[in-house]
Image (tube, rainbow, N blue to C red; front, side, top):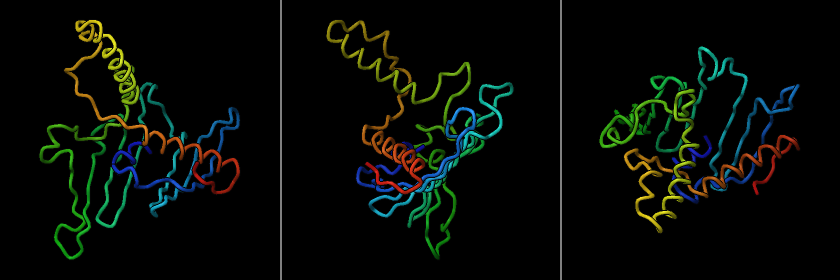
Length: 207
């Protein structure tokens, strides 16, 4: 989710994490963290408020399967972006944009970018988070990792034989945009600081 937020923000110098305070609860038998609440402050004044839990009853691998509940809300001076739902039921949510226009008719009116204009031809309208079906293709992150491995292998083999690339990369399937290394760094920095804060009981600087 952190990676998705940074991908949406889009600029390298926006929301650079500076300090994190986090509290966690842990399972009595395994010691694994099962619930958390965190506040992340950034160098430009942006603040993240994050909470999560593993205590939602049910499982995506049970019969019947139960999906994850996800909710992301991004607020700014010019409006907000809302995205959430049940990741097993795409119809439970869609990307929603509400613009701030005080005194105008469009103030607070909902727009759905994935179902309007040119984007409707390129993006799926609905809540698509992870593919947890046993017969599915797996999480998007895993697919992107495999695509990256195949692409690298294809480029290497293409140097020796052009025919080799045909069996490694399926060019007919659309390739989603992958997050870059800076988004990965921001995400790992915040998660690392969350664990350190939880252990110390204090807010910690992001390193």
